[in-house]
Image (cartoon, rainbow over the protein chains, first blue to last red):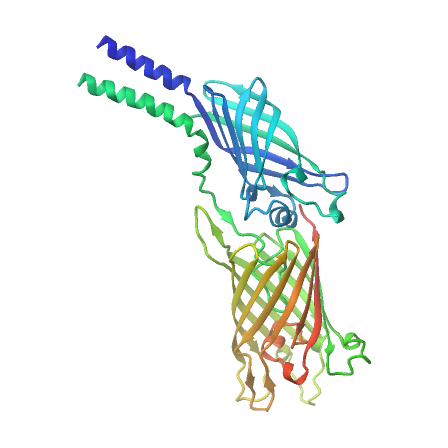
Amino acid sequence: MKKLFTLLALTLGLSLSAQQYMTRQGSLTFDAGSPLEDIVAISNSATAVYDVQDGKLGVQVLMTSFEFKRALMQEHFNENYAESEVYPKAVFKGKFEAGRAIGALTIHGVTKDVDVPAKLDLSKETAHLVAEFAVTIEEYGIAIPSAVANKIDKQAKILVDCKLVAK
Amino acid sequence: MRSFVFAFLIFSAVQAFGQEDDLFDLFDDVEEVQLTYATFKGTQLINSATNETPGEGVLQYVIAHRFGSFNDDYLYNFFGLDNAQIRMQLDYGMTDKLNVGIGRSSFLKVADGFIKYKLLQQQTGAKNVPVSLTLNSSINYRNARYTDGVQHYTSDRISYLHQAIIARKWNRKLSTLVSPSIVHFNLVPTAQDPNTTAHLTLGGRYKITNRMALTGEGTLMSNREFSSGERYTTPFALGVDIETGGHVFQLHISNTRALNGPFWMARNPYSASNGGLFLGFNISRVFTVKE
């Protein structure tokens, strides 16, 4: 019986250390604005997962969940740039290590290795992930027509702000 | 019993490990509603209305021209430009679904008002809706003087169009629409002629690039002869949509010149076989009034 309790404690311990956090209401801001045009969109339905034990970190967002102030801009974003019907998601899969998020970022069907600064505030119940970085739009195979080239910041700023909850 | 519990514990421990490996699988069981967007580029396909409305707080200005026919002194009339019909339209998105607008056309000096409402939007994911459904109604007032020497009531000048626009975006390139429509004229030539007629508009667009598309439409059940001897034909049009930022240019060739629903749909006297073909264009420009 004693053995059993030891085992039980061990298993519990294991499952505690295998603590996972998750949210489906993460916030992601996309800003490719310039002095000529305000191009900002927010999604409040990003999925983020984090595993304490092995440091695995993942963030995913549906492109159509980005909300722009202007309906037409949102339509152009999905229809002409992100091509959301063909590439519905942007995904980051990687690890959180010593204040950095390191892994593979897939946008518009193109996967690139990224290594960006990130902050993760961990408590027993929540994990708050904040990261701010820039992506070069053209590196992900998204062409910017010359007619609008000076309205769009080729270095789009991405702000990740996700409050994950222990599973 | 003991070994059973032991096995159970081992099993649950293994399960806990197993879950970790599949952490990113959590990404795949997202069952969110994916609304279909941009079934058509514009709120009009060519002559007919599409299921689209401008978004909330968006003011849209549309200017449309239908030039003179190819068989009417075409070069003398500068490719028909000299006797163009024109319609201007101003409309506003009250909400993302509700759109109201007014227009004025030089053809019979018709002034019109319309209301358009998106009842259903095509979507996939958590909820599957295969088509979009938009309702559209217009009231049209003829300002042109009557030349028949008869005293007319104000109500004689009014006609209506009511339609349900059923649209589907099959893939990113192909979208089609089917619009069962009712046209009502308060005044018809003789008592034997119907005031109310039913019509069926079919239309589609095929994108050739991200910003350009081919369009086409035709309206069935419009080909009829009134007892007064007036013959009305099947309206059709072929065109191209070109989008540049806030503008949509629609260039087309059609067998119609009137620019108000009841007139081009139910009272089109032109026939392509007699050279009744017209160049035309619609240009729309949107302004975000309220962000």
